[in-house]
Amino acid sequence: MNQPILNMGAGRSVPVGFDLRVVHLLHSRVLHDIAGPVGAISNGLELAKESGGALDADAMQLVAMSARDLSERVRFYRVAFGLAPGAVKTLREARDLLTPAVIGPRNKVVWPEADGPAAWPFGDESLKLLLNMVALGAESLPRGGAIEVFVEPGPQQLRFTVVGSGQGVRVEELTLAALMGTIALEQLTPRNVHGYFTARIAETMGGRLTLDYPQPGMLAHRVALPT
Image 1: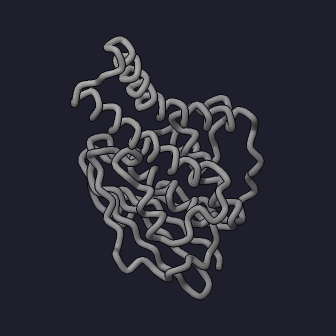
Image 2: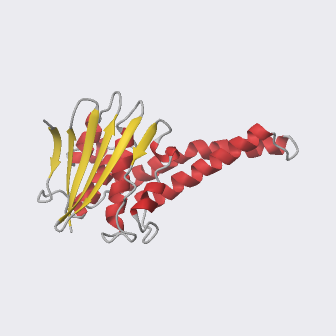
Image 3: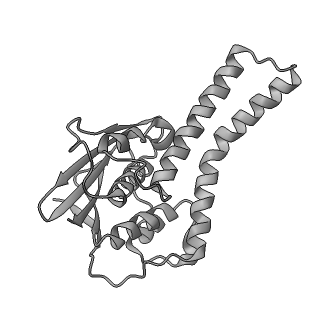
């Protein structure tokens, strides 16, 4: 039997306006995540300068890999955290944003090939929500694992289910509080603000977010949105 640990109904009265602190923390989260590849590129260019403009093959490969990593993270955050109308038009395009640079090299996304209509009919915000749910699934797998995505369009509801499975799968206490909307703004950090942001997206869309453990070693994030 599923063990519910979060049930946030659309009828709950929770403020959806973001405090400026939330904006600052989201910025901090993004900058933290891109600092690594930016630093690697900078170090490579500095090394090239010191060596008269030439880089050996290993250094060139490091710079190229870091540039690709940076590009993939920025593309993801542009859609998941920003306003980018029309940037992602299909489920396949959304899936393509979930690279190892975004979800971690030890995680694998399992997403059905039959991924819905050629053009996504439910709006940009629903894809933003789904991308953030998958990223939350990745965060729940400290040792890596599989993230299985289910998309179920219906006549009255659009359902997303993201199931993370792996050793040590968990949701941290403050992240759970952030998802529930019970956390004080002062307790939000760059680490748990992502959960707060994702849950508020679901709320603004009239949705309901639930978390449960379908079985040991698995954690499911679920959302039902009115269509």
